[in-house]
Length: 266
Image 1 (tube, rainbow, N blue to C red):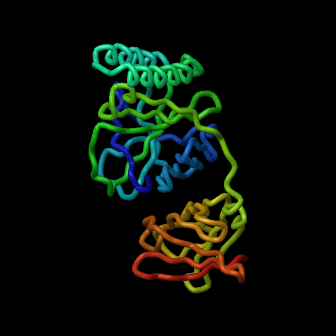
Image 2 (image 1 turned 135 degrees about the horizontal axis):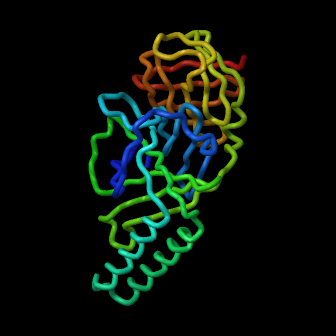
Image 3 (image 1 turned 180 degrees about the vertical axis):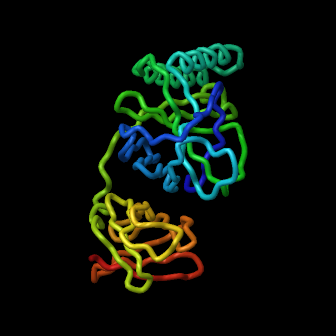
């Protein structure tokens, strides 16, 4: 799943009234299965899309992808939904094998919920201005103590999957990405950044649309020497890029419309 961001449908959500920085306990790289979440002080990188942290849900027009605190849930609320799911299944007319599988799903969810604190948790959500899709499925993230969980809601997937809560593990960046750590500069385009674990912070700007200190690039490995991700161009917007690490140590970039350029280590 590459650029899909979800229209979140969480019962009882009330949106934050003030923009605020993200709690530093969120910071880091989190993973479960093929889902990766990267949180910095400036961005939430959700399923390989860079979403600028804005603190609260936008009320007007915005561009690109944004991330924000977007409501809350609790262990009690999620446990109540699980009980509703169990009750619904009983009258759903499932065959014995399907019912047994659904009960296994419920048992796994119950174990996860049992481990949560009896607290209220704020969701971190993302929204993409260019994604106009709609539907009854969505997902967001919550933080309990030092652990991040992905919470999914999808009524149309069947009553046994209406709610999902999965723990994410804090992980290190892949070695293929960390090999790029350091400062890079383009003599052609007169801009540069410092890469750390796949996220780059501008050290030189060639546009009024971004400034030194802004996070302007995200890379993930495709192989040891090839990468893909997003980078801010001179228009101030993130665009998809493909990158190759050349034998001479430079980075070869390819953007849309066959644009190509290189970056050299400083």
